[in-house]
Structure formats: C-alpha cells, structure tokens
Image (cartoon, rainbow, N blue to C red):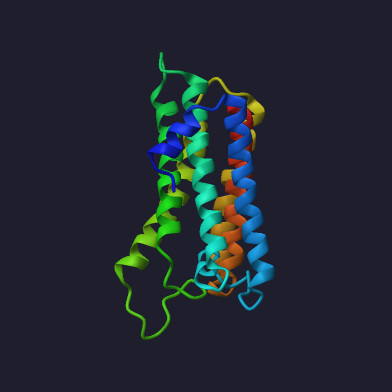
Length: 212
C-alpha cells in the first residue's frame, strides 16, 4: 500500500505535483465516505462509525478510501520536509512533519485491520481480538497525528496570522464538538466522528496549500 516504492515515487514528484496528488487523495477519501452513505444506507451516518463500512459488501471501497487518506498524509509530510529543507529546521517543524507520518501509518493500519464494533461499541458476545485492537490503534494514530500537527503549527513562527487564527478556530471547533456530542452520548457517535474528520480534512487541505 504505502510501502517504500510508493514513498520513493512520491519523492520523485515536484512539489506542485505532490501537492495536487495529496489534495486529490484527500478528496478521494471524502468522496468515498459520502458514497458509502448512499451505497450502504442501512448504516446510519449519525450512529455508525466510518470504519464500519469496511465490513459491508462495499468494504473494499472504504479500505481504498483509507489508503488514499494515508497517501495524502505521506504526501503532506514530504511537502513539509521540502518547505523547510534540512538546514535549520526547528523542533516544532520536525514534530509537525512527524505527526503527518504518524497519521499516514495510522491510516495504513486502519485500512489493514477492520473494526469489530457496531455503532462504536463491541456487540454482545463478540470477543475483542488483536485485529480490533490494531484497528483502534490505527484510528487513534490518525487522530493524534492530525491534532498534534495542528498544535505544532501554532508555534511555527513563519506562518501568517490568518493561518494561525484558522488553526486555532479548527482546534476550538474540534474540542467543542467532541465535548458537546460526547455529552449527548453514543446515539450521535457517527455524527461526532464525521464532524471531526471533516475538520481534520479541511485543515489538512489548508496546510497543503501553505506547503505548495
């Protein structure tokens, strides 16, 4: 999927082409999620997690969507490395780039191991196996990667005030949405996840534009 050959191919692209490819990959992921809502209408997007579509008849499509998202994270990390270069790169820059690599690895693991949950919880009588744990580890790495990158971006001193404000706005939205919908309960777990994913994708696209 995102093996050494793919990474070498990404490195061979120009920055503009890499930015276009990363943007397209994010779009593929978003379109895949939207398409799954129509193809598997029995799963309510308000209650069911995105990963649960991988266990349906159209599961291969959702797996491909996660691979595309992982591709976009890898591309964004490479763009960040080019943006700063190797001379004088600061710790905050390294953390930001590393967070995108973490998200890329998380997306790959998420795509490789399907979830065992339904509506975000383990069904009665189902034993939590290594497959399910690895999936949860992968999805957690995506969340940690994007959120960590956004936090690291706040201490990067050579970006515009507008981008900083946008980043702060996204972080505040994520925290408020997460807290608010968690308080409502599992009945809106799918909606909560989709709003957080949408915010993460929007912020990722904005930083790709900065790196371009």
